[in-house]
Length: 120
Image 1: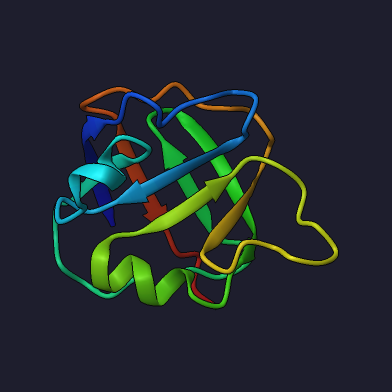
Image 2: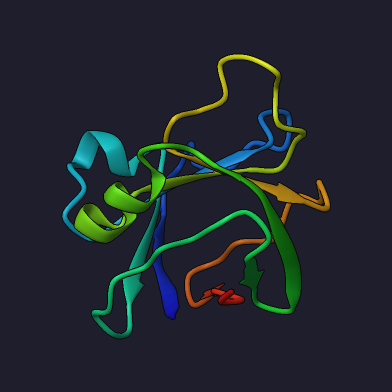
């Protein structure tokens, strides 16, 4: 399933904080300042799992951890936090997708994010 980036908040990207907060187009103005807005190209349910792939333009990531709220929020409001760091032993972000490699991507309006389920 693909999403296209339609907006990048002024404070959304900071390489010192290796994460990107994604929201759908219904995000409030306050959230948009700190978020990257994604618009899904189709409306099917997503169920991301450990081992699935996430592609940001040409950069491919493997999902190492899916937070307990990540899929629900991704499906309801297109909200998820992409984390480019190791999964902590405690206090992992409940809405996070932890990704490897830990390469911070280049995100622009028009960037394509592809959620790729590997199936079982």
